[in-house]
Image 1 (cartoon, rainbow, N blue to C red):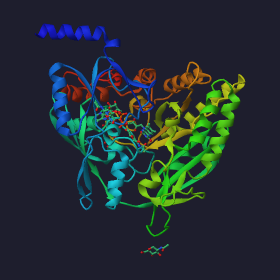
Image 2: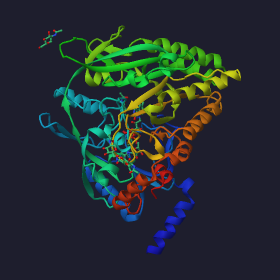
Image 3: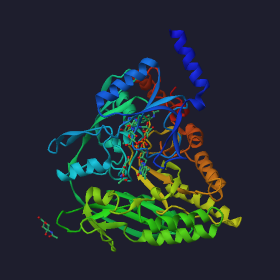
Image 4: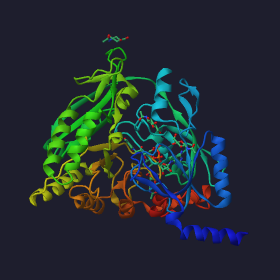
Length: 506
Ligand SMILES: Cc1cc2nc3c(=O)[nH]c(=O)nc-3n(C[C@H](O)[C@H](O)[C@H](O)COP(=O)(O)OP(=O)(O)OC[C@H]3O[C@@H](n4cnc5c(N)ncnc54)[C@H](O)[C@@H]3O)c2cc1C
Ligand SMILES: *[C@@H]1O[C@H](CO)[C@@H](O)[C@H](O)[C@H]1NC(C)=O
Ligand SMILES: *[C@@H]1O[C@H](CO)[C@@H](O)[C@H](O)[C@H]1NC(C)=O
Ligand SMILES: *[C@@H]1O[C@H](CO)[C@@H](O)[C@H](O)[C@H]1NC(C)=O
Ligand SMILES: *[C@@H]1O[C@H](CO)[C@@H](O)[C@H](O)[C@H]1NC(C)=O
Ligand SMILES: *[C@@H]1O[C@H](CO)[C@@H](O)[C@H](O)[C@H]1NC(C)=O
């Protein structure tokens, strides 16, 4: 019997490219997150996830959780046949206790669901936020974060305990404890320890916040006090417009509840059908004509200078900074009524996100500027092709083994003051070979930054090539501590992914 199973496994791996089907990211067909999926289960309870993992373990099947698919590249699974367990319908919320400061949620709860539930009860999760239609389980697994130097803004920083379904289908509860490697590994686990089934989260009384935005010249940022532009605020970031040679500085902080009656509601991705179609036509022509990209950046910069907020009650556009409203509505918001997210109009993107010690912020941005300028010298104008420019985010140091902002001093870098993230989304043309205008520029940019700086990749916003090249920047001691925990939770490696393979924990 054993013999038959292993020859079956051999057969399956020989056939691997045709054994399964592609599973896609939120961008849909043409944007696979896994290449070799053999079954997708819509689990409806934690118990069902447990029994699905037990089934997989008993047959030696690979298995991965699937949240809302809000990742960019084919790095969710390994390339061997894999079973997916979707968490969307495992979304209970219970044990709410604002006085004690916690609530428990199940894996598939999205930021939307959580924010609405908490707001109705006068609570929030502060700044441990990512985006709307994304699961908390998927965010914590992959080390997702907002942007802040002053406050904790890793989603995992809100977790007090995690229930993880391990490689034998047993639930292990891991409590926050920085002296325990089980916790330090679980805090950013890449899904390699198992499926995060439940999360006990810290909560706080709801607050009103303001949002403010300024326009800065490139010189004010590249030669300025970048830390000082960000650190004073609860959450803040920069958006870079390299063709315009300008930045937007966006920042947020708490205001007294009676400061304003305004109920602002942010949307980063809502577009009307007309806007969506116009942008797609312009950006597709930018695959061949840099003048289209220059026009697009100019247009996007102008639009992005206005508040991307509506009044929640009337859905009317808000035209003046600062904007006021409730915590989640202002920090994240969602979709405007009667609009769709940009990807529903065929506007898709590629991206690259690398984190650097914030002490290197000026050097890093100047290096990127020099790469833009090198193209200019050849007569090639490069731009940002994304509606909100190049996203520059920040992170306060956070103690775990694989998070993007852990404060290891490997390679002599000082991460203790926090990190700056260079997040460069770019338009994926719908035409021709689907490569970007001057594709090689993007590859060279990534390689240069990885080779010249001790940078760390975001775990869902980079290609396999970027992970492979950046692997030399990981702290080998911490990788081996993570691997020891992985071997304990998942001795047979059924939750393996290509990311886990590249960082060397198999
Ligand atoms: C429009 C958009 C905006 C974004 N904004 C930000 C941002 O501001 N900051 C940031 O850091 N990231 C951001 N992201 C990235 C996003 O937070 C991560 O990719 C996140 O992992 C996606 O979660 P998901 O629920 O969609 O999971 P999926 O995309 O379905 O899965 C992502 C990975 O997590 C694993 N996984 C999912 N659920 C679980 C679970 N319960 N247990 C174990 N493993 C699991 C999957 O196997 C997969 O490897 C953004 C993404 C999009 C598309
Ligand atoms: C699982 O849910 C998704 C999303 O709702 C749906 O598209 C798919 O058909 C469902 N699969 C099954 C087997 O029910
Ligand atoms: C969230 O995702 C689900 C599919 O998983 C989709 O049906 C729904 O429209 C999305 N909501 C928004 C506001 O994007
Ligand atoms: C808000 O309330 C505080 C105390 O309750 C009061 O001192 C302050 O004047 C009020 N501010 C406004 C703008 O009404
Ligand atoms: C930074 O590293 C030290 C160990 O060198 C650790 O004790 C501390 O908790 C870390 N701080 C953060 C914020 O990660
Ligand atoms: C490993 O991770 C810890 C955080 O847990 C960090 O403080 C430390 O600097 C890292 N490096 C080493 C070699 O332990």
